[in-house]
Length: 534
Image 1 (cartoon, rainbow, N blue to C red):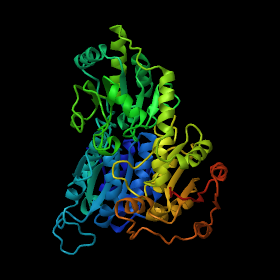
Image 2: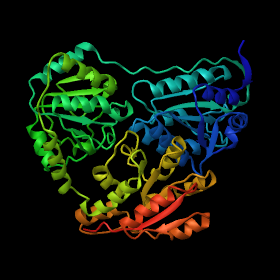
Image 3: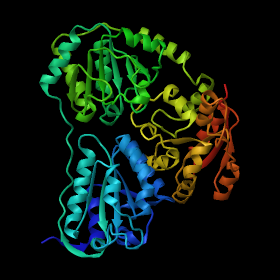
Image 4: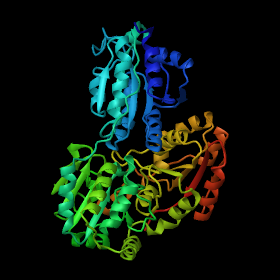
């Protein structure tokens, strides 16, 4: 016999068994059984102001900590509201569990006018999750939540969803709990490693590319040593920033652009190693990035191996384990390639940055880096300064540069930073956002106020959807429409919340404002007037 309890209690106990210490959400009449169980739980609840914000908070928690984030969401509008955040986590390979309710099983999907009816909730969530299931009895709840965590933490991390209908939440059942299952990283096949070594033996100029998989697997140390063994400069995608420290002598970073010096280097390379990246359209300018025919791809997800660029050889494995195995095999085979010197890498990096987009905004990037400790986290929105930071902001540790790369979602940074700060309360966490993107989720300032979350909220303010306006200027003969914004006075907004604020009129003032704000146990709004006009 198991323990007798309600479905809502079983859900919370199952989360406790998985090591969950915090959940994000907004209560509703369809989740009251879950919330009642939370009263007696060790799990902390963080009250968001919108379900999208709750999803982004859970995502930010996951990205900063490496542990799954959890959002508790009502059916119907709660599910459709949280979907944007779940979709962002899906495209960026972030582990996020949505625990949702639904109407009673007898009425689900029939659209008979029950509160929060949704015609196919599992179908809706299928589009943005790796795994998605409904509990039809109390007894199923613990096993389904355990399976959700197993799916999230094995292979490629992605969101999952467990739906517990109202009748299951309120019914009693005899339930059993089993210990959390620890996921084991996928080790490479020795034959695949040997084949990769054979391909690298004859190479003279090797390049390494790190994607998000190199960050999530903590592969940086092994990849850095591999780069030294092969004389191979290291490029990263946006998601790969921080996989190898920016001050590693072989690190170029995210500096490739069509036609720049790094592009010329790639054209002369004769082998490339890619760790944990789909080599996506935005990162490669729709596959314009020239990669050598001897292309070796390492990815834990076999579906990614042939995506966008066809490799000469592939290794389906965890990036860290693969890099360690490759390094060991190269040493055993006596393969060491002179390749590119550290001095040449340094010069190539400087030349690429010298001509790259965003040089006029570089002082503000320096201001951010000067204010944020080495292990501090910059959480960027889809905003012009964020795009500049993707290239110019140095990152020294994994999970310290968070960016909504896959969906490109506005409004990500503030709630994601709240989640990151809860995951790492002793770290400096700084969200940066444009004035337009801030207004997508600015209601979450209230969450930061309520829970005394110390965040310097940096708003780069030019009263415009700048990227869209720039495109209208260059591609549509300056026929502007729907791009100029009427903004509130953000300092008065801060005053309404009873929190500090400052208008930073220079890079030095921005550094000072962030440093001072980081000392507080409450959010600070930092309004930075700026122009991106050329």
